[in-house]
Image (cartoon, rainbow, N blue to C red):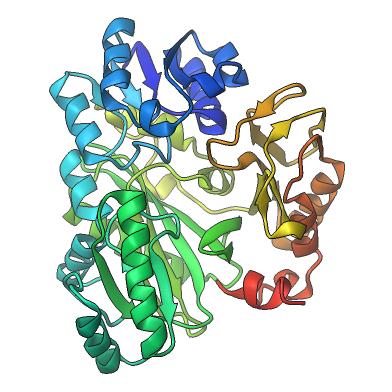
Length: 448
């Protein structure tokens, strides 16, 4: 087992990894930017090193500075968390060549599954269901029009690299397609340094359901149930829950085995997530694989009684997973809301600033994953998420009631947050009935 791990990340996920390491008796090293000099997570790390100024490109994305720190601190492994370098195959390669374990998949697996086009090709070979679309990248708008006419509108243009909803445009006609194609390529080039895009049929009113995978180097592959992530805004998830309100044991097994089949084909070792679109008839279609731990992983941990960060570390150290598929049983219901420093009443404008008062919710079945505290100033340089509030209960109605109660207890002053929106969602009749889809927030709830 590792004796010291460097965490190449910040905020909530850095703190989550530190806690797992502490329970495992592993020392931690944090790197931070000048903007994060007073980050609360640094206080609980064994060591912390400043690696550059606020811009991510000069700190959290600077591989040379991170690796230099890893050498100085004499670490055994690096955990990238999510975002930043988590899905960067070159970073995983550099770790490998430096004799430092990368707590994530191999560079080859990241390249294969992290690129949507190659992942789609692998899915075809693995007989994973897909929506009609292109096998190769689309070279120009004329080709895009020909493809759309062939498979029928609406279609969606997607960046081949990256994720998080960037480089994606839906088109219902030719004019929208030409504009969307150019916008998607420009956005992809800026965000991922890769302007490659592909096109697939756009499924209207689907649910977004993902399967959590964890595997080790001994050939053990386990799926830890599903998460329903249908409530989104601009392809950014707002609420996640497990199990999905429309899931059946038979469908869960089918989706889980499909996800494992794909990951096995890629020789994928560590935690990962296979994302699918699910229609009202129970048909599911592969979207992508996120080759990292995800923001919403605690939802799966709660309903399956697993520790995915611990399992990740064990797998990277060459150990066997502490559980098998037979040990994993989905019990109860969990809901997570992402609390962002944004103002929902002002077009979700970012709201960085100093936390002047904070009341953290508690009581049975409540989990608070956050790095913020009174006096902490949220910098404007990074993602706006400041906390993840989770609840767990025997069933979905009780979980919703518990989330209402927990949101009512929560107080974050000094900044605007998305808490009012989450309160609205928890009282929405369609959400309570489980009748939502990926467009519900923007097309229905926010349109009221």
